[in-house]
Amino acid sequence: MNKLPWVEKYRPKKLSDIVGNRDAIITLRKWILEWKKGIPKYKAVLLHGPPGVGKTSAAYALANEFGYEKIELNASDTRTYRILKRIIGEASSSKTLFDERRIIILDEVDGLHAREDIGGAKAIEEIIKKTRQPIILIANDAYSLPKSLRDKAMMIEFKKLSVTDIVKALENICRSEKIDYDLRALQIIASRAQGDLRSAINDLEAIAIGRKKITIKDVDLISYRDRQLQIFEVLARIFKAETINKARIAMMQIDEEPETLLAWIVENIPKEYEKIDEIVRAYDYVSRADIFLGRIYKRQDFAFLSYATELMSAGVAMAKDKAYRKFTRYSYPEVFKLLSKRKEEYEKKVPIAQKLKKRGVHFSIRYIIHELLPIVEERLRRDIDFAKRFVREFQLSKENAKILLKDENIVEKIFAEKEVKKERKVIVKRKEKREEKEKKDRQTTLGKYFK
Image (cartoon, rainbow, N blue to C red; front, side, top):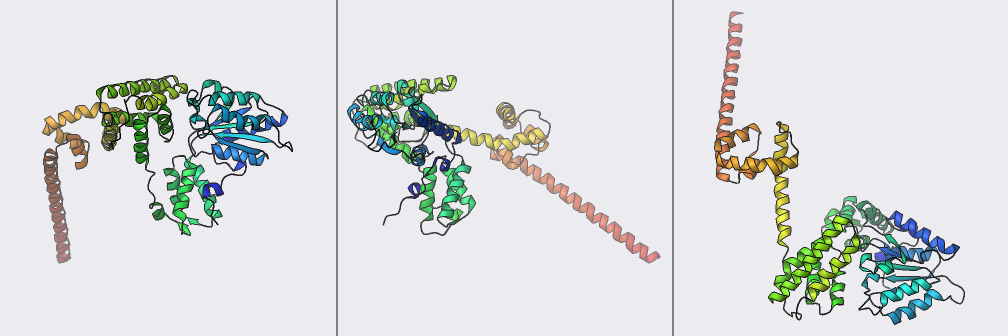
């Protein structure tokens, strides 16, 4: 007999079992209770948020807790006006033989698109308008849906789960499975999941196979989810897509910040496309996408996100004359390497700035690093006497000096003289101690002689 995967075995049976997102669960419970009083203002809810945060589990738990018969459909599989009307329309407007309550659960609604899905979004809008049964829509990106559809549903946001919430869920599973565990190991699994409980449970199950205890060493057997590989796959699907819808679907297959994916696309357009006019068109689309992303941050209006993602995916895909069948080796964005290098340099200079502050430089760490140290570095490299005084005054280590001077020969020269001076001081102190001891010995001897 096949065992259920843990994500199914431990799927919540009631709303109170859902991990995290308390506000979303409270709102969802209030909405379904309104149906007991009659048909509410909002006949549908739209549960939206990143993958693995409990949207689908919440829908199932609600149906189970309140005794609803579930009618489920995946919007990305069945998306025509006719099929939606037939399957969902009848279920939402009719009653069963024994007057059972039904709840319509439509997952991956953000897979719909008004033009290519032949009225799929329009069908859902009409169904919501006529329904006599509650409807739950589920989407990762709610703002990719038409505004007319969003307006007809109560929007309930599910956010990424905290490490603490995920650890508690993993602990409960371990106790149920009678598996001992190192709490630090569960914390590592939870941290790597990046707010995705489903991912964390899958990792836990993979590690626990054949083990009665989970340790940090066991966790090392799984690496971080290969996000880079996922991005390579998504890039290939966008660049090689032959239809607009395939490009859109590729965009939805990765949980990544739009700015990050945009940087990957920008870096690799010239590697995929060979014709100048194709490259120009593709960059024109990504430049427009960047403008929309900028408007999101400036105005905090996330309705622009759908335009940005459309330009990044469908726009770039349609910029080519025809799909290339070649293998393309995509590259990590140079801008990320540059930012990483700058961050690394900044972190190396923090201890130096702290030493300057302790010795009376009354500025913030950030100001010292960005404003003062560039001037100091230039003077240090031109004036070795100044460099010697600076190193001595602020008690910099050899590593500190190497960061500022960027010239090991000068640093070695400075610290060679510094070491000679130290050695001289040590020799003088030893001589003084020896002379002091000899003086005491003479006094002791003379004291005994004249006693």
